[in-house]
Image (tube, helix red, strand yellow):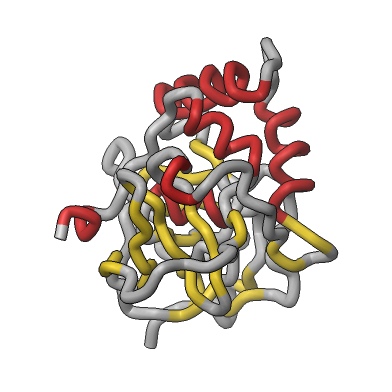
Length: 205
């Protein structure tokens, strides 16, 4: 039976047998004795996205009282949920993201802690996922942005919207009307400044 450790673009953590391209964490939010989540969904404002393979290290998932292993379809999904690249296992990606975040948000010499504080405000609304108004028409959003309409999440790439699913992306069957932005605005501005998240290969279908 699959563990409850897969993150959706809205930040919800669900159980599914589907695999993802990235792992990551929000601190310790599970009970290793039962391998189930606690009531809380984060224990730190540092929500990071990590590599699934690094230096050949292997971790038994949810087996000890260490950080709780979470998984994402791709990097765009992780960003939409409010995560950022890890400065340990993804140092070069994290440095590129920080540089784009600084440029896009008009700041300099920002620390990971300072970025986390901004992201924490932007991703949550009284414990729930915070949605934002689109700052520009959907077709003009940078590649990798994600939006929400009703109960469905969509990836924007090359000016078109693709429906997100646990297995990947499919073409949207209808035009979106007044969708809301899932990707935190500060992250979106990093995309506008040139950072491009790694997307699941189904975007090419």
